[in-house]
Length: 614
Ligand SMILES: Cc1cc2nc3c(=O)[nH]c(=O)nc-3n(C[C@H](O)[C@H](O)[C@H](O)COP(=O)(O)OP(=O)(O)OC[C@H]3O[C@@H](n4cnc5c(N)ncnc54)[C@H](O)[C@@H]3O)c2cc1C
Image (tube, rainbow, N blue to C red):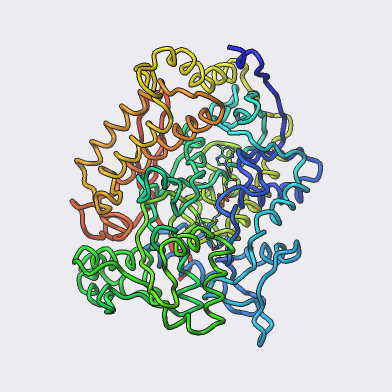
């Protein structure tokens, strides 16, 4: 028990507490300092902000840039684009708010040293597509993190946040968070007047295509563990569009990005017989979703749908035709550099499988589903909108404040706003930071109070998996198996299997129905019971244990939302086989949930979609 005796409790007070120092968290930290010169701004991160989050490896393109200085696009154009891609359902107020500010964010990145490619003829940023600009982005994250580090009063790296703390005087007001240092094991109590959750999206809630030794090989970062959803869900914050999980079409096995290939290199796809296939599925898709199939660009999910149908018809795999483009030495260089700046693994996979795209057209595949709020998908927290633009029904407080007082979010955390990507996530962090400063300034002396009993209870809960291990290891029967506990990897695999089989993963061809969803809810309930017996051999496993807790709660939310929406809104992302068509009459709305942690029940409701932009 030596380890337990050595564990200290550290107390940290903050005016603004930012949880997660990825793109949104760095934006929130930076902007909080700008508006809150004298405030104490604390950023807490489970890794190290220098290289944490989905942008850790770097990126080759900034996917959200309007180019308003050259009149390339206006914010309204971006709202129309995102609305179209999400089959009509986005929070237009939030999307517009990001779009009108995102260019200034990108200009800051350039000022801070991010090399952005320029078009030699026009001198403008080099466009990869209508919204994307190309960067030399291997060091994107360190550059952004430096700005956050300089802005923060303190950055706490290597702290896994496990729970939020609530105010003991006002039940629906946040008061801070607790977590543990994944290296020292010290317990941390953060007391914060406002809390901004920026903890990224969720991978590994569905069984990935690569399992066993390759299980870390997913499209979304394996360390994105759903804390962004679980932390607010547990304290009763409302969530929206959690059924809108995303499936990506990417290069097989390495999940290398295809954007630069399609948009910049002008490569295209074909079936295994060298034939164009999307038009084959036009009538079939129109029958399912109506004129959404006629929109330009064709929504991402519908392009997946054509691939899935073609593969089911036995004419797969779908391949990217690279052989033509790669004859041009410039394009060949860009094709490889695209991976080397952001997904080196894809280059390694091709090398290991004797694939030279100059001579072989590489296979594409569709990924397992992920939950996130910043890509071509919009799962996340239900947030209050900007006061000058949001309809009154979307406004109950400060911009980007959730339905819990003082609890803000940005990036993957916030729902309803697809296509923000790295620059939009940072921008949303800035928006949330500014609003949180206003919230703290308006608070006066009415500060939230943390209950000693609450954090002391949580301390026991947080370290319980280590206690379980200490006791249960005496009963090990073979290898690592003990009848008294389950290890985080076992729980994770059980979660992935049931989500895959019952909630529309790859093993079920992304298909589910009411019975399967109800069965998933039962199985998730049993898994949750067993999580009380999670065992952690060391601090690393303790982190895995809490990541699993967060993934399970987010999965439950995904399942409840999928059950509630009785239509198939996004074929290609998932299918409700018992409601196979898009149903605009009944379901042109947001789904909103609220979890009650005392009873373990979910309350579901519909919320209206307001089209503000024509
Ligand atoms: C594979 C991939 C490719 C992409 N390509 C592009 C692209 O080309 N261009 C582009 O513009 N965008 C791209 N994006 C999108 C972009 O990376 C995301 O939109 C952006 O990173 C989201 O920001 P975020 O802050 O919400 O999440 P992240 O940047 O992932 O940050 C979340 C942070 O929270 C931390 N955290 C999580 N849980 C906890 C916890 N419990 N306690 C403490 N800290 C925690 C994480 O360690 C991480 O640092 C891509 C994303 C992926 C996954």
